[in-house]
Length: 314
Image (cartoon, rainbow, N blue to C red; front, side, top):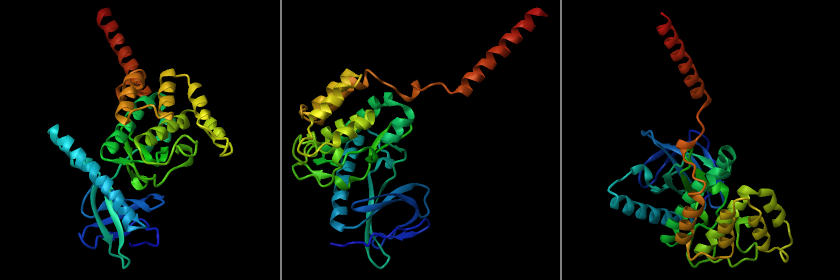
């Protein structure tokens, strides 16, 4: 088991792969987690940018790679059936050691450009929850079908593009189904609310997703509920928050997830699609028309009317 000293690498650092020989230039740090640091990098001689994770523990990093390669294999099978292949859709590119004298392990994956979920909804409004929620549930369903549970589901680990496309990031907390959850955030943890075990199952992620919705829609209420003593803290507090939501379909979905009422993530995704997404659908083509375009249209109408007036007058 190899351990790194958890150094920070500044912009311009050249990361040389010891075994594969590829070279990556660091642009900036993207984030630091419990088991590694992620950098935005550019492969030397190429235009594409990637996310490169330098790990603190070789075995921990390898478990993440196993998850990413499983997801990649499944995506390739789906793309092959659809007769379309997109090389930029790859989750995982390569793994190697940083030949800097310490043989620090790293792997390279696709860079997901966008905003964290809570920042995206804060800017674009809660109406987008139907779309991004469906995308997130679909990602969880695919992960579950590969035999894994994400575990540490929180807004910071969900990236959303400007068009509402969703990707999970930071697979460090992912665990095989049936094992103990490796990493969690208290608010999103089933055990924290005395609502079940910390065993990795599909219901664990669905519970975390339900709390995620409550956090996005009523963070102050969730924070207040979480301040109770552990012996008095109960999932009933979450039910109260859910039932106070104005959207009763969303409220019912959240309550069902909190009490483990779904047979699995496929069932949960389908119900979300039919009862929440379809009722609050908001796609990019339904976004408000930019003010400059409205003004330009108004000027065009004025010019047209003025031209017609002069043509008929003379």
